[in-house]
Image 1: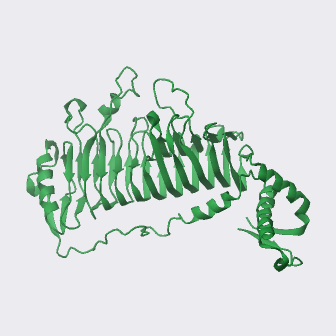
Image 2: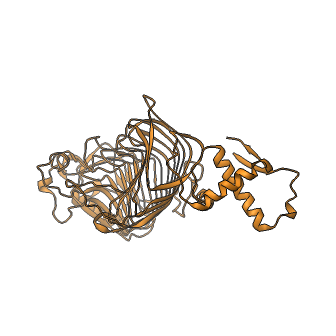
Image 3: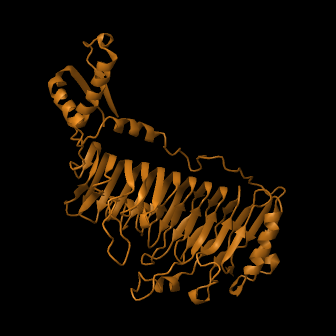
Length: 476
């Protein structure tokens, strides 16, 4: 906690409001100088205050949005069991028709529970389960749903979808079951595994599309053909207590991918894949993550954004209470050269890391391409990014890296209580075209995060003449 007090001898009533405002600002500047802080301008303090409003609420089941309430008893529920529609569940027989028929029945019947029984393995081909449904549908998955494992036999009508759920409102997906994408042959055929292979898109294991008020709880999603779980063009989604996994060397297997979606809560979940544990891309806002374990994988990412000169916008993202282990990146924002749009109002806080490369990284020169990327002047603007209470060990010497565009610099970056170290004690910070402030304990020192604002330099000069008039208390 940091508090500032005027000396008792100062009569504030005799000071005009304009002068008083300057004095209060001087307090902030003196505090930052005392703690070796890089400065931008007064708006950082305002931004920091605004970002506090994005705090995740306490409790395992914090109600962030108006999601449907579910009864714990079975009163008036209608059970729709896939076995009753001919599903065999031996892992070899094609159970797709049974699932489609059971879905039609459950979706058209109010208060239905679609049951996938425990202890069985259901082979289901790519399917689009469409709403809207009558009432609030519950999908209870206790068994294992498996995908066909041969890419050559994949339905060409659904090249990017395995299990897709469309146009649903107020549905609940829950249970101790498994959704298994059987992705090993897809990974082997990837150009990232073998550069002689053509680069082709692959299906996402589970997709929720154009839906609202959806809750996903307790499921395991694993071995996605490409992405494991995608939320697309949806609103008010809560994901709680899920496990997402794929081998560390499986290409492009993002754990949870959020695109064009708003009001998404992800909490108390464990994710380890061959790509980003969480990726948040264009047209997404008000995304809150809490209690996340990430590893292996590429970290928790905003982006990539701006590919092929596109517009990318992501705002109001909070990660609170996370542990990252052995990931190739930590807290990452990645954008392509030539893009447009912005990333704003993001806060990463209370994060621990163990043997993480690039623990804190902003990369406006991202290039995930077999060919080198052309230098371009336009870029996605990145500002109002807060890192608070981030600690642990870095595998890379550059524990903090802000690689920003000269033409569209990163601004209003805030570091507060950062402690990152390499095993040999040589952690560094890299900055290019990035400005911000730091306060509290900052290691490695982020002196490169300096402001070029001439007004700040003048205020510092004024401060040197006025230091003795003020009393500053700090409690850190």
